[in-house]
Amino acid sequence: MTRLHDAGPANVGLSGSDEPEYRQSFVGQIPFGFTLSEDGLGMVGDAGVTDMLRSTRSGRSGRSGRSGRSGRSGPPRASLLATIADCMAGIPACIVTAPSLAVTLDIAVRMVADHCGDLLDMTGEIVKRGRSTVAGEVHFTDAQTSDLVATSYVTFMASPRPQDLVPPLLRGMRTTGSMPVTFPEFVGTRLLSTGVAEVDLTPFVMQASGSLQGGIVALIGEIAAESLTGSPVLDLDVRYLSAVRVGPGRATASLLGPDLVRVEVRDVGSDDRLAALIFARMAPVG
Image 1 (cartoon, helix red, strand yellow):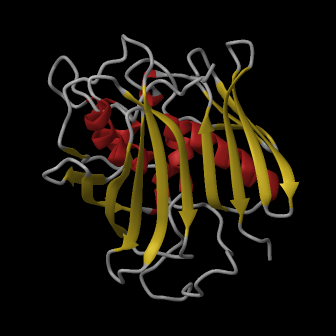
Image 2: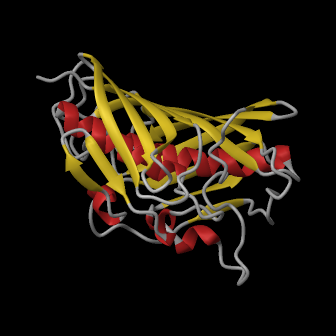
């Protein structure tokens, strides 16, 4: 039986007070916004990249060689872009799968540039519309130079659970907050030991259905991989297998090769149930 990360994309509906639910979570503190095309299958938007949202380690090598450009810093965290891509592709995916909720199956993020400015332009589209599976692609470019910074691919499927129905949908979203501290610190990520990171399940990091948000699953996997290797993540592949419903969510990283890390994310409070598998390609050291 296929086990799903069954909370769907990040809080795409409306709360009972007509306040967008994403404003009640950490997602509301990521400065980004987008709108859908008239047919609901394309997306255009932008995202701010503050120091609090960037990878905390520098010294990337083997990339575009633009590290000395004025006004440009290290790229945003891969898990941050995964969160944004999940939101951006999730709304049109729900339009396709309605009345069933679109649930996230996997997210891939590929970093292209070493550095970027403080504003990204974003474009996306639904590239597959199947009866049960939907796929979306999102591109992130430097607003100043038009250079490609990263690309993400997200797949969804219609939830098989009859109670998982699409809520009233927005035609986009725009957040107004900003994080006063780093992304991992802001959401309460803890590094337990080298290669092991975890986060408690609190309303601030939950999906509307009460499970750990997919971007936070990606984040603790990223932190675990970074601590194991001492190097930032270049590419991140997240495969959601089940929801973290009790918590804490704990990510444990192991080295597969010089630049490749495998991470297991488990729901500690639910008999250590495996919730996600993550594969991270790391920047070469030195």
